[in-house]
Length: 349
Image (cartoon, rainbow, N blue to C red; front, side, top):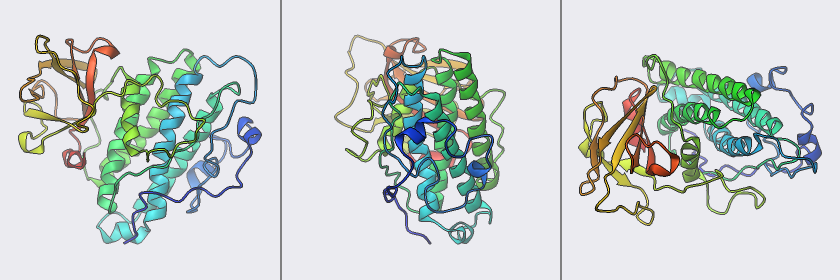
């Protein structure tokens, strides 16, 4: 089996110049070139062959959605890098030897190519009056093809959730259309994983899960960033950043199915909510277009996954100091992703 490259080697220098990247007609154009579908090299594809931050090249006003696409480009570097590391770490035989279809490595390469196309799209969406963030270095913690594919499933479904959330923040209709188009592509990636890898029903009910606070999901990807590895010019990611306490769950207390108890665990003992004894708190669960709040027990850090939910798709949970978490500031911890399809990938949290 190939050795995991949790810290993939830096991309070699000598890529395109800053002015090249700022020219949307430079290099393969997404939607016009098959490059973002058919490239099969192990080396990083364009535009990831230069992962540096690209400074502004114009003194004009920033575009209305520059900040949104700066956040999204930073997130996309993390997602693209996950696939690039998989291409470098494994071979086709590694997947077939583990019992996966003989097309798996090719699909990983093709999704990597799609994600490189997303990098280019998001770079182009940021005006030349604003900086285009570069790549950090990332450690995903996968140690074999099975854990790699499980992480892939979670990344894709979280991508779908934050992209739909960013639609709420977009200022222009063109940006909203671009976000939805990318979300549909991530849905295809997720459907492939559910069908080919997990042999599961890919249908997640009549609606995928909508979550209103996209930056809280984007912040989740910070756990993969190797400290002090980001370009110095990169802005805070995401901006604005709440730096909420991240939560997991005690696997011995829950089946993660609707109606089951769940005990939450705070991943970082130095970053926990400052709970007030005279304040009510709620575990707020988002599924489909529905939001249900359940009392949160401060003593046991526990609640109940709503029995009203179907056993399909994705449930997102946060801890909040108001029913239904009506504002971003009402969320005090989270989010936690609970996959109902496929439940076993949750154990890799």
